[in-house]
Image (cartoon, rainbow, N blue to C red; front, side, top):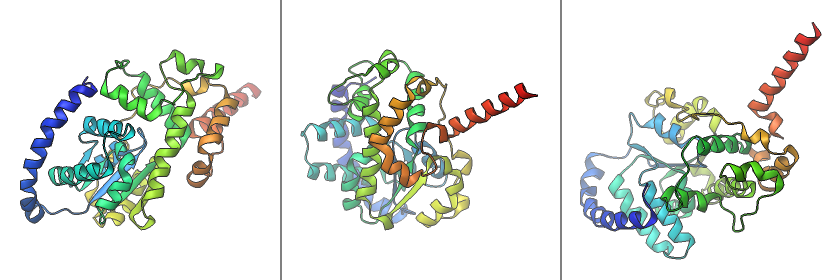
Length: 302
């Protein structure tokens, strides 16, 4: 697993290649025209794999291209090691190199205000997942994989995303600490800020919001938004990269504590995009649990 230092060395080499590769841009712009130009942005585990999968067969689409470089770029931005003009140059040159119709990557949320400005014809897709199922999915994702070394570039990315300035675990978060996870404040504040940033900077006429669980049903909406045929999208790929294993960690956190944190960080966006979900009980998992309990009580009563 590469470290920040090794990624920095790779980035220097790539910088040379990137500037040479833009010589192909005049050819691409004439003989390989874009069908559209779009960015899909979300929180991790919310649909970027699936959106890329919908388009990748018939369009130039990629999921998280050059992820290592983008993590380093976010790190440099947050630490004041790079200014926005340099970031804008990076994305303009990178765009000519990759020449994608669709880039699907949660990393781009940190640069969405630059992307909106630098690519005025580009459109944006925000795939949004309710904070309860997102939290549960991310726990499953992290726990089903080996622990990352402290120097890993992926560990750096997670720290940037989820690590609060002061890491303090309450008694209710003991299970998170024991499993090498971050406090709830880190995850839920990230969920709010990541989604809110896209909603704030992208003009409404250039933005399509799709709920993660409705990606398959939104194929027609996506095709109309990007002015392509719906049959050109691969609906069979609408839900890729499902969890390897489910750990049920969310149920081990004190319910009142969990609901308090959700209300503190996420309630406004949840009301706006998931008005039917007022608590964990209203999620699919909560409804299934209730139905199972009702069925069990019915059996006992017969």
